[in-house]
Every structure is written in C-alpha cells, then in structure tokens.
Length: 167
Image (cartoon, rainbow, N blue to C red):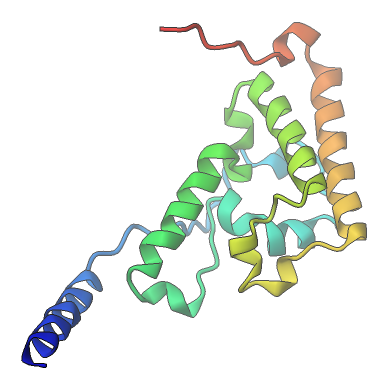
C-alpha cells in the first residue's frame, strides 16, 4: 500500500509540474490581409457556420474552452489547432499558392460531404458544431463559389498542385 501512495504522490507532482508548460495560444485580434473574407465574399448565412464549426481550428483565433487550462488537455487541443491550421487556415488563405487554395476548397467540400469535418473529437464537446444538412449545403455552396471564383480568375494549369518528385 505504501508503494501505491508513493506512486500516486509522484504522479500528483508530475501533474502539478506539467501545468506550467503551456503552448502559445492561437489568439489574434488582427484580421490578416490574407484572410479569405478579404478576397472572397462570405455570405451572412455562412459566417455563423464557419464560426461554430470551423474557425477554432482553421483560423488565427481560437475560442478556448475552460478545460484548456488543464494539462495534458492543452497539448491535445494545441495539436488539433496546429494541425488544422497547417491543413487550412482561413486567416492566411490567400497567402497559399492558387493551386493549393483551389485544392483546399475541394478538400472542404469532400470532407463536409463525408462528415469528416468538423472532427468527431470536436463535436463531442461542441454539439452546436454538428452541421445540419442545410448548413452542410450552405457551406458546400460557399466552398464551390470560392472554388469557381478561383477557377474563373486563373488559368487552368495554375490550379493543379504539382506532384512531389520521389527522392
């Protein structure tokens, strides 16, 4: 029994120590010049959908829940945000090459259609982020409009993401 108490005490100390290791928060009050909304219209009925289901992981401004203050949850959430922004960051959308922008809109359409976005791990807590069929249609329609706008503005060969050459 004494060894169990020692193990629990060590675990408690470790738990307390890790509370002081915090990644930088993804919070910005400045709208980037590369924000998608600065270049492609976001309809008023799509803005709330993006706000509740996409922006926390796919912009430079995350709304953090109360449980973000507890490690190791902070690391887990940070990993999701960093991964989401690496794949698609609406705040820096137009800083990507045109082919990548076009591809990301295709990806959005496919992932929403397949119910892969928002992630189930996000919707477990954020029940309001579960998209209705109507919301999915609106979001897909907006992604199609952005994609069509890109397609209309650039030559077809600039919309192809080059394949990586084998090393």
